[in-house]
Length: 244
Image (cartoon, rainbow, N blue to C red):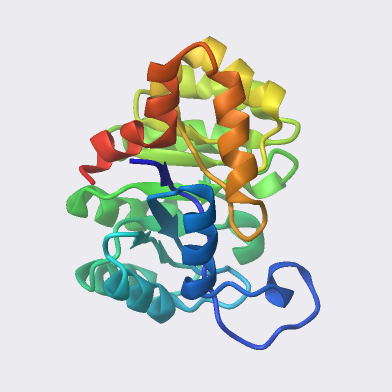
């Protein structure tokens, strides 16, 4: 089973900027998954216009193809109650976006209550982690992984573009910290594989920001002499850890 764990769904009024001017329907992602041979995809809404209800609808309509993360802003006073409600409705993890929601991932007073809920529900925490952004530096992920060692923490974008080396280093130090391959150049993904082995890497596309076919090809090339590593990165790791 090929599992791509990082993608977006959203319906709303286009604004002409970035993701907000691109179609992100469940029908659209399923079409492109089929074309690329992707069996199952993790999906969340977008931070610019949170619509968790559409993620719940997509997961309920296509439980064999889509699984959803709850997108919650820890700056909101009722964020903990929001997360509990969304997990009770069937969503399977928490998505955070420190830059777009203007908080530091390392602020445990703010983020900690949400992570505690994920610990109780035994679901992963997945955070945006581009390397050139002040709110989600590698040491923030390190702090979070050490504070909650029983929670699976996923480092979105692996610190690309300028913090991949640090992301690999802290992943090597924390058993519960995993890296996703979305938007990460081939060379850095290959470095992660060489330094960490295949067990701590998840295939991710960040659809519609990238194409499933490109994500697959990148992993196929870097594992061309290691079919076991390919199977792990392209689905077995996530299936094993999250019991899919």
